[in-house]
Length: 197
Image (cartoon, rainbow, N blue to C red; front, top):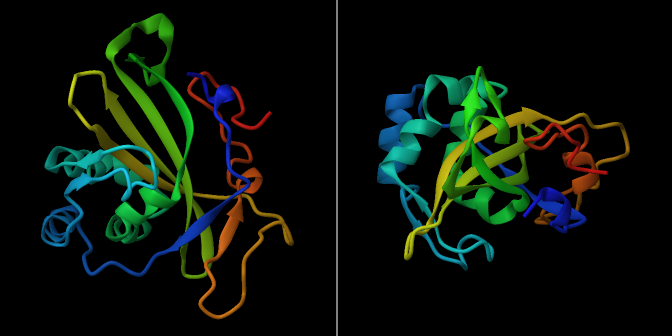
């Protein structure tokens, strides 16, 4: 299924982040294991995306140096880990494609394909320090009977927001939301095409 055939929602709920209680990957790993991040998320927990497993191996990938460098700052990356299950639930599927091989940092069908895995890319929105950020979560959908989809990585990046374009509820106890058109502005799929046409 290409991203073009996926119907996107008009907006997504913003997940509020707080400063993490840890400052390094080792402490983040220990915190996640002891605070219910690791484990199986049910279809209800994922907001209808099927079962998703967050394993110890997932944590290793998510807390690697390369993963930390993809996010705006390590502190925001660690803050997002504390709400990873909420981020997955509030995000939407934006892209689904085969697991293309990577050569010289570029994924392409020309480099080969792992036919037993599909990559599923979720996008959502988080807020940290009053600033909205894009949350991209990558899942691996294993084509083996009885295997849940596996959380693989996440990254938190800046969103280009023009004044007046972000619809945010200001009532007390309201859940803030972000327009998907703003959230995905400038985002490209695995083939380099804009997700929004």
